[in-house]
Every structure is written in structure tokens, then in C-alpha cells.
Image (cartoon, rainbow, N blue to C red; front, side, top):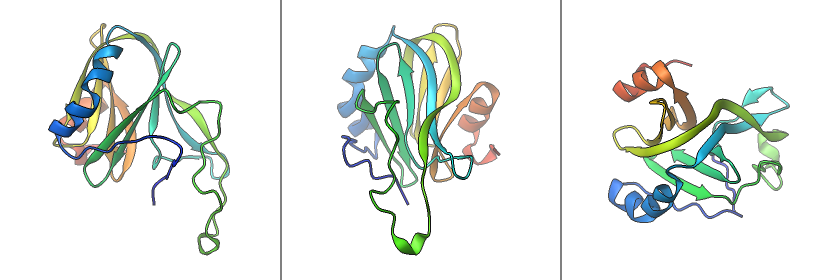
Length: 167
């Protein structure tokens, strides 16, 4: 089950050539900008992260959405998703699911106003690494059929072997 987000333009790429054709100009334009936080969707009913949705990286005045699919696809979206608007999974949930939603964007990682120095596409494991001037990085990656974010040693462990990371 995946979040549809029909109001937003996500172009999913399943190989590095199509990803670079689609997104290199956008990513190049973001180098040197300052990022503040990573946001994920929080389910207020269950008090759990809802990681089937994209993650958002908050820049000074805009957001970059990164969404991975377990089928080996990744998509970006620049500045279409507003953090103040509640994400909607279903317009009307199917009755057989017996599921209620109360989703909000919530801070997942505080990036402490870091300046972007580059991007690296992960192709073995699907994801995008955002590198910063201070040598640190954050990875928005496909993790067991969801989209998750890792930093530091957990990100290094994920890059070495995505199946070795346990949340």
C-alpha cells in the first residue's frame, strides 16, 4: 500500500540514467543551499512513523521530497508539498481496511542548518545521499519497502549492507 499523493508530480526512475536525466539540473541547483530538517509522516492515532510516504528535506524556503519504492524506483519533487498541509493517504479509506488516519508532517532528523555540498544516487540499494560541507551526510533510502532516513554510522552500515540495519 502506497500513498497516492495524486496532486503532486512524482516521476519515478528505475535506473541511474533516467534519474540523472530527470533530476541532475534540480540537484545541481541545490548545491550550496542550507538545509534545516528531514520530515516524515507521523500517524497521530497510532503514535508511529508512517514511512510509506516520501520524506521531505526542508531547505531555507522550500522542500525537496524524496520517495523510494521497494520495486527499485526513486522520485523527487521540488517545493510542491507544504509542511503545513496534512498528508492524505486516502480521500475515503476503503471500508474493508477498518483504518483511520490522522497524519501530519513531523521532524524526523534535525540537520542543524548544514550547507549542501553534493548528492550521490545509490543504485545497489535505492536512495539518495545528501552530503554537507562539514563532511556529514544524510541518506533518504529504501528500507524494507519503506522510505527512511539515516545519518552517521547507521548510514555507513546501510551503504555497506542495507539488510544489516535494524531499526
